[in-house]
Image (cartoon, rainbow, N blue to C red; front, side, top):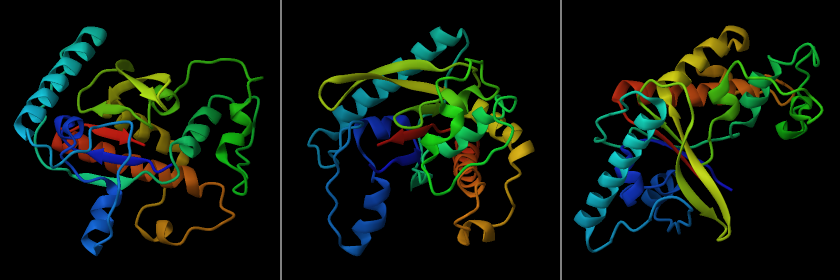
Length: 239
């Protein structure tokens, strides 16, 4: 299942007035793309565009009030502007989540020892036999990188903001976090992850390198969080 990531106004996502990552790449080539998603309404030709946009803006303001109430601080941003990031989120969050969690369990798992030939979901750090601990990087370990929002405001909790129906029967809450706090966690995590600078290392991955995947995910998330904080726009994940 493709996982898309955006940095853009939340109302545009809610109203469906944007191109998905796949559409933005294939449509200019004349390839038709049929979008099926559990997220926004994908109807750019909707007759009543102004009404749909109005509802989306109202929903965004309501979401901001919900987060403000839950965090006991004012959460507000100027939710307007262009789409500044539109890409597929390659690898997903699991490689970086495994690394961030491993840092808290080095007394049980002394070596990283990630096997590039196996899915990162099978890393020993996800075994249920490990004791439960509060994560040093809570947003990376517990954040919603499948359907969630990261808002360009500074708060330190994850807030359930929207209930979704997945597959017509499974209910799940969409979580909202802070892109400001996410950027701070990523900078702190890189003190040990030590992602190389420059683009060369990304263009020439080594198949046997156990560090490539978490570093690549860190790089993607850092680009998103920097754009979010610079432009004052949310990060939005959608599968």
